[in-house]
Amino acid sequence: MKRIGQAVCLPILTLVLGYLLIYVVGKPVIDVASSALTLFMLADTPVQSKTVHAEEITLVTQTHDKPDEIPSSQVPYPVGGQQYGQVIIESLAINEPLYFDDNQEILRDAVGQYIGSVMPGQIGTTMIGGHNYPDRFGRLLGIQENMLIQVQTTWGLYTYKVTSMDIRNYRDPQVIELLNQRNDRQLILYTCYPVTMIGFTDERIFVFATFVSGPIINPDL
Image (cartoon, rainbow, N blue to C red):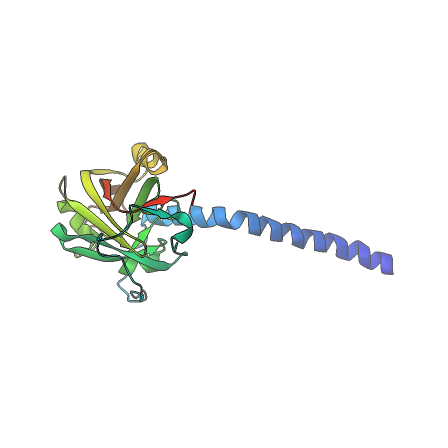
């Protein structure tokens, strides 16, 4: 009887442990894939709600006496769903809370960083998206070359200069290539196009900007 019990229990235990291992190993990949799908598609019809509230955080709003470099070990990296900054484009009267994640709940009331992109200050491209509401990222349609974009974070103030704005398919290979580059510091903002459209569209307004100033994150410290 004991042997029969072992013969039944051992395969079940092995199966459970196998599924648990697959979940632990695969969850980060699933989260990133889900985040990418949400941010690139922005497919759900926007629903005005107030489920996301600005958190009580301290942002760096000035560059006076701030270091040009900051050790990675001293950066208070946000976790998914946490506000860590503010995106400001004074020329367009844009001032939006910035969260690290891009689920629909966040994007209805704020802007969100695609979690597969680098943090401001790191080498590579930071990608931030938001819905095309007329009083928010819908205003990106009026952006012009050389306008300044500020990204205030809890560890530094970053300034980027707009190099171009373009309307492209959300699967545009050049955008994906820029997102994956690790040669210099870049910023991409985007929203759905046309800005009067509610729901899924294939086209996006992409705003491309290059790094001007802000503390560089040193990954070796």
